[in-house]
Amino acid sequence: MVAVSDARANWIRPPGPVAAGLRIGLLGGSFNPAHEGHLYVSDIALKRLGLDYVWWLVSPQNPLKSLRGMASLEERLARARCLTSHLPHIRVTNIEGQLGTRYTVDTVARLSQRFPALRFVWLMGSDNLMTFHRWRNWQELAHRIPIAVAIRPGTTLAPLASKAAQYLAAFRVLDERGLVGAVPPAYVILDARRSPASATAIRARLLADPTAVC
Image 1 (cartoon, one colour):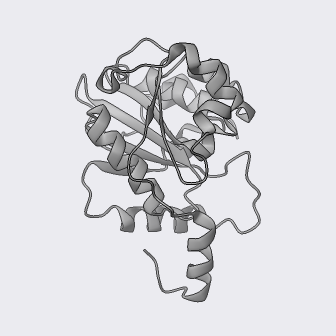
Image 2: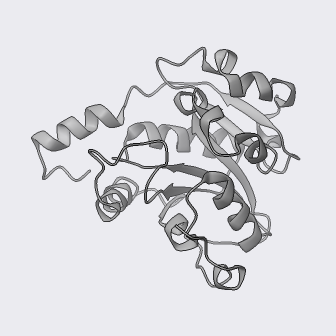
Image 3: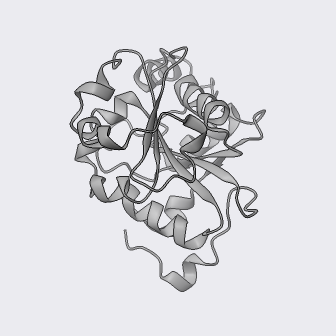
C-alpha cells in the first residue's frame, strides 16, 4: 500500500475533536475482533494517563498476522463501533487505511504531521510488547511517541523479559500523567485488574453464533 501524499493527508478527517493540547491515546491492531481486552487497555489509559480520547486504529491488515481467519475491515470496524457505542471517549477509525500506511512507525509519523497540536501516546498490551522488537523500525517508533504498556494475563513478566522492554528500561517514566507530552523515548507500565479476554476465544464464540455482533 502506498502512503498518500503530504497534501492529500491534510484533507483526512480526524475521528474526534482536535483542539490544541488534547491528549490522545492510539491503540492500533487488527481488532479481529474487538473485545473486552481492548476496552481494558483503553479504560486504564484514559484514567491513569489523563487522556481525553483513545483512537482505535483498525488496521486494514496487520503485517505480522495471517490473512487466514481475518474478518473483513468493514466487519471489524462494525464490531468495534458496536462495542464502543456507549463510550464517547473511544473513537474507532480506519484512518490508517485513509493514510495508506501499513506500518505503525509510518502511521504515527503521518498523524503527528497531520495533527501537530495533539499530544499522542501509543498504547499496547504487554502481549504486544513481547513482539514489539519485530515491528518495522520499532526503535524509531519509540523515539517518535511515548508508549504506555498495560499488563495482560499470561505476560506479567513481559515488561522485564522482552527485548523491547530491555531497550526501553532506561526511559521508563514513573509519573504516569507525565507520560503524555514527555520527550520520547519514554514509557510507563500500567498494572491493574487484568482482562482475560482474547481475540481467539471471541472468534470461536462468533463462529458458533454469527449473529453475536458485539
